[in-house]
Length: 208
Image (tube, rainbow, N blue to C red; front, side):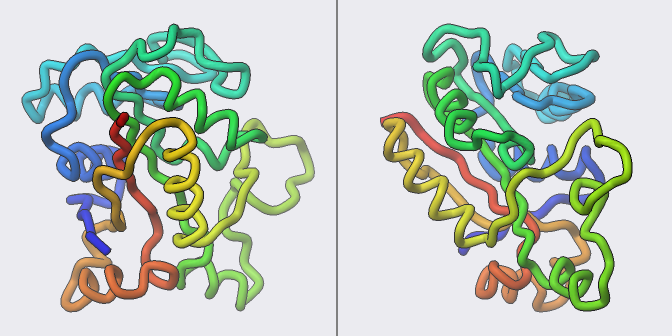
């Protein structure tokens, strides 16, 4: 399994890691679904892309305020590249959400999905700690939370199957890791044991 490295462990580092993983695709119109701060646009610009960026999220500062669960407000194949980084696991209907990403992409879809069975998460379960604020049972209704828990291999199988159903192929896929996991033999071990050691599945889908 290929391993892609984020230069830093923060949000910006993750965006840099994703853009570097597929350097040839960032052209034309790019839709960032669940864009949060919109900093992917900044990373694309700093790395020399001339892409026209559109960010969609539930709240500003998104370019367009919208809800993936309600369907994307765009025509079929409206964007050259559609990106959803750590987004699908937040949706109730992950199948419909995935289909919407593919529907709006003319060329490529880029997704990341978290592996909740990697070693760090398993250790938290073992000692009785909550995984993160996205899980557990808070006393008040949360603004957002993860709806799905799955392994690296489950995420990979899901993306392969749904991509084929939507008329895409897996162009490139692999493990996305931060700098600490790349120390020493870390990068090699992550590639060999992704279910245990990889925090994030990353895939680039290409329309057939």
